[in-house]
Amino acid sequence: MADVNEFREDVIPIKPNPVLEKCIVFKVYKRRWFILFVLCLLNCSNSILWLTFAPVADHSAQFMGVTLDQINWLSMIYMVVAIPLSFGTTWMLDTLGLRITLVLGSWLNMLGAVLRFVGIMRNLPSAANFPVVMGGQTLCALAQPLVIFTPTKLAALWFPEHQRATANMIASMSNPLGILIASIFSPMIVGTTNNIPLLLFIYAVPAAITCLLATVGIRDSAPPTPPSASAESSNSEPFLEGIKLLLRNKAYMILLLCFGSGIAVFTCFSTLLEQIMCVRGYTNDFAGLCGGLFIVFGIVGAGFLGLYVDKTKKFTEVTKVNMSLSALACIAFSVVSQMRNQGIAVAVACSLFGFFGFSIYPVAMELSVECSYPVGEATSAGLIFISGQIQSVIYILLLQGLTKPMAYSPFSTCSVGGDAALSWRVPVLVMAGLFSVFTCCFVIFFHTKYRRLDAEAQAGGKKPTLATCDSTSNSDQKVSELQGTELLVNS
Image 1 (cartoon, rainbow, N blue to C red):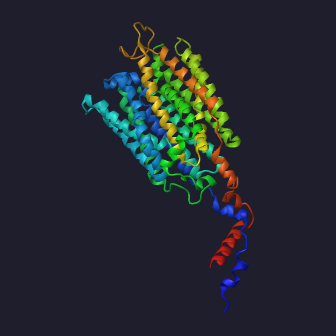
Image 2: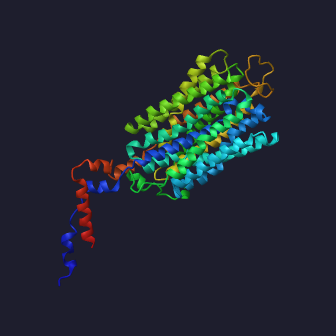
Image 3: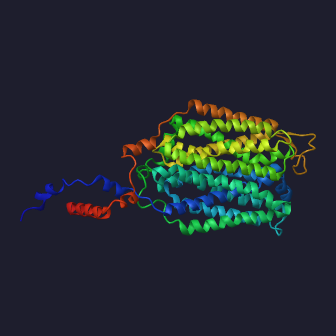
C-alpha cells in the first residue's frame, strides 16, 4: 500500500481564505454591554461614597463633633490608600483578570458603605462615630483603584477598535456622575445635621445592588474570542517589565506628570468647593449646583470627545486643546469665586471648567495606552492615576496650609466655628497657577506615536467581526468547509 505521506504535498498547498481566517479570529459579544453597565454602577457608587461628606462638610463636622480638617480626611483617605494599593491593583488586573478585580472591588465598596452607616448609629458612643465612619470610608477607598483602573482594560479586552474610546468614555464618566449625585443630593438630603444617618443609608443601597450584580452577573474576565488584534496581546509584557518600559518612555512620563497634576486639581476642586464658596456668602445648595454643573458639562463634553476621537484618532490634539481651555477656565474660577454676588459668573466658570476638563480624562487614558503599548492597559492607566492621587494629597495639604483665618466674615454661610471662616483667595490662585504651568509643559513637550494603532495596522488593519462575516451569504458553510479541509490535512 502506498504511504499516505506521498500524497501529502498534493493536499497542503490548499490556501485558506484570508477573509474567513479573519472571521474566525475576531468577534464581539453582546454581554460586553452588561459588564460595562456593572462597571458604571460600581464606579458611580464608589465616587458617591468618596464625596459624600464634602458638599456638607460643615454639617458633617457638627454631627460627628470633629473639625473640618478631619472631615476633609474622609475624602483624602481615598488618595492616601490608593497610592500604595494601586501597584497591586495594576498587577491584579493584568494578571488575575477583570472578573476577580471587579467582584473584589464591589464587595469592598458594599462593606464600606454599610460600615459607615453603622458608625453613626445612636447606640454607639459618640467618640466612636468618626473612627468607625473612617473605617468604612477606608474600605471604600480600598475599592477605588480596583474600579478606577478598569475602563481601559475592559475597553481593550471586550470592545473592537472603533468602540474603545466610547466604551472608555462611558465607564470613566460614571465616576463624575457619582460626584454629581453626591454634590446635588447630599445638601438636599441633609438639610439639617439630623439627616446624616439617612444620607449614609441611601448611599449604601446602590452599593449593595451593584455588589450583587457583579458577583452573579460577571462570569468571565475576557471573551472567548478577542475583538481586535491588540486584545490578543493585551498582557504581552510582564508587570515589572512593563513598569521599566514606562519609566524609560519620555512621552509617557510627561503625560504621567502633567495629566496627574490635572487630576489633582479636579480632586481639589471637588473636595474643597463648598469650603471655598461659603466664605463669600454662597450657600451649600448653590455650591452643590456648581459642582453639578461641573460634572454635567464634563459628561456632555466627554460624550462628544469620545465619539470624535473614535472616528479621528486625534488623541494628542484633543488632549492639548482641552487642557489649555481647562487652564483658562480654572483661572476664571479662581477669580470670580472670590467675589460676592457673582452667582452667574461662578456657575459659568464651573460649567466651562467641567466641559473642557472632565471630558479629557477618558481620552487621556486611551492616550496613555497608545503611547505605552504593549504594556498592559491597567499598568499604563494605573500609574497615571497614582500620580494624580499623590499630587492630590500634596495639593490639598498645600492649599489648606495656605488658608488664613478671617478676622471678620459677616457674609459667611459656613458653619459656626473659627476653622470655618478661612480665606481661600491665595490657595485658589495657587491652584490655577500650578495647573497652568503643567498644561504649558504638556503642550510644548508631549509628542508620541500611536503604538497600539500602528501594531493593529501592521497586523492587518481593521478586521471584520463574525457579525460582518455573517452578513455574507453562505459564510458559515464556507467556514465549516475550510475547517473540514484543515482537519483532513492534519489527519
